[in-house]
Image 1 (cartoon, rainbow, N blue to C red):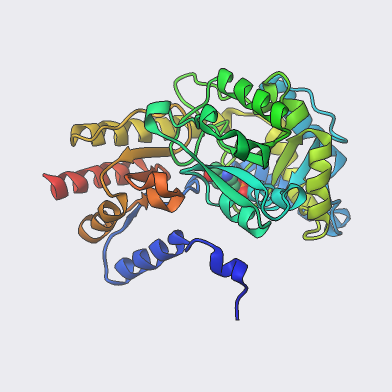
Image 2 (image 1 turned 135 degrees about the vertical axis):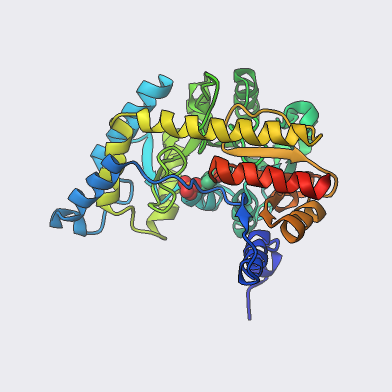
Length: 382
Ligand SMILES: *Cc1c(COP(=O)(O)O)cnc(C)c1O
């Protein structure tokens, strides 16, 4: 009954983990879920207020514009200017997205012909791979290895592959490895993209979730980036707005025009009231973001020090709300954690082959629950 295209998709491991978790809860286990990449913190009140007010205005009840209201695109440009020093033309260099996943899922349709290569980091956010497959592109895996700081080794990509490559996905600060990228890496990417006419899609969903003074860059800050690429960004992680579905694609205008043509045919834009709330988020006070980061930092310290105390090799991440832990056969270890300690973590294999010997913790639970999880692990392993 289903298309071959659906049959070709890798099994969605996360749905399976949800089932196992539900089974445990039905059996009365007090499950600690460190599996989900979704903030447990609420959306800040001033943003919710802006939504409520805008929702009451009948002018906002119509179909929105495909690319976002001019005032939303101006707010995005203003935020990029303040935060990254990047100048964007709100008319041509910004479009709204129903979350960055929307942009990631649809951009290959605009650039990839059947058989064209897309460079996909592994481990990585699963949508890079599936969106490539939907466009009938060929995935060329970029292994992200610990010894390279979880950056792909661009020198290792064969020339023949590069000549057939249409698009590259990148994501720093990175999910799931929590790695960050130095500026030189982005310069290398821009050079490669220029040499081989490759569209760069940088996913910057975690730029604001950072610690100890680390400030994540925008890819678009890199000299030449505005000629070769776009950045997918989102309010989901920054303002605890995952359920609201709003993000933005920014960068080279012809690339955005391609994405826009696809999206015009599959969705009808983001509810205007949500865009008004997003404007309040982007241009309003940013202390809510600092408070979230402080909460994640405390949790991160607790978990990483706890894991180190149990004898694990665990590094302190500079950004994201993930901790990426090397363990032999992460799938077995995750299963054991769930069955014997009631802890949900994500096996690294869910993000690709190169995640096989890892598990990912999401620190989207309270310090009390994280402390309890470390204690349970201590009892299990001790
Ligand atoms: C959460 C996440 C996204 C998607 O976020 P949206 O809610 O769709 O904006 C995109 N990329 C990565 C790496 C993520 O972790």
